[in-house]
Image 1 (cartoon, rainbow, N blue to C red):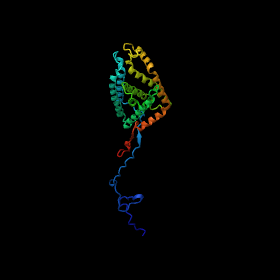
Image 2 (tube, rainbow, N blue to C red):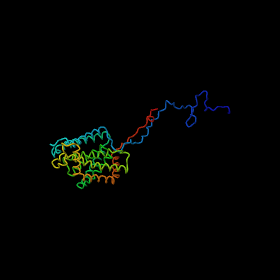
Image 3 (cartoon, rainbow, N blue to C red):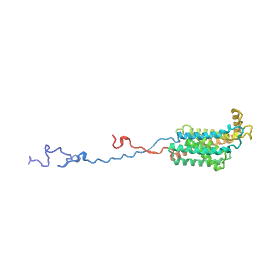
Length: 332
């Protein structure tokens, strides 16, 4: 019949609002969709882990306050060891360093450990970095006998210049001192002069780490700077080592020996004459050898050392950056 109502159609005035079925259709009669308060909340989705980032850090090991204090102390001990004979007066004997050398050696060893401990604690370096110091010290010690007794040809010095440049002043001082100690054991050069050689080589290597622009300067300019430093520092090393024995040579070479009663300019002239007469030829050979090896092999050695420092964790370790506050669950 045309006027009959379909019983499946509800009266809009007797029934509530018509529910919509999913997908845009109508809900079946008598079926109610659950209210929002009855629905189970969805489990929070964990944010994807942030990519690993590296905090920028220079290639060299920077000095912290404790490292600076340790280096100042060991340098002060070295200056005292080299300089006290100048104040000892004429009664000092030729073998006076035989009495003070063991004390200097003990003080230097203790302070070297302090430098390493301070540098490691302030920079977060681990066992790999310390092991790298051992490898470089062994390499330098093995290079020293190659030129022993041959007109000052000592390839160990060029390696110390490049290593100090890459490692920085703190580890550079430790490397120079430990290398000289190991080479003395290897070549049978243990004696009252060994602690003075350790301090002088530590200064030599530390100076390379104090040169400017370690993170920016590369290429030919850096090699020229290192070669110039190596030349001057090799001469300075020989001069400092002469100072350890010169005050005790008055009975052997009175014309160029230290005179406790003379003025400073007079003694300075005597000291320069002593250096020229005894070690200048050897020191020049060492300086020229350092320059030649730095210019010829320096580029490749610097690249290898910098690559090794990255693998030895001298740079910043990998750090995972968490999500920002706005991305965390429960934050507006």
